[in-house]
Image (cartoon, rainbow, N blue to C red; front, side, top):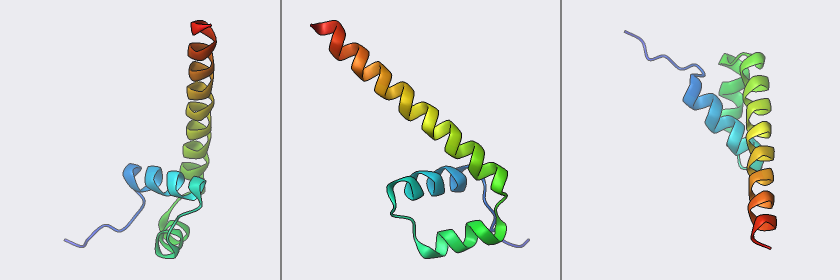
Length: 67
């Protein structure tokens, strides 16, 4: 059995998070371009952005509620 070297869910999530912070390794980037599907990374980026915005809204709401 050969080792599967693709972009599974965990790999897509890690790549998306590390790319968002600008700390993605060159090897991971090359693997993503060779084996990954663009749609997976687009969806992961959109989901990460929505989660970030929701987290910010919740934090602001919590802070304003205390005043």
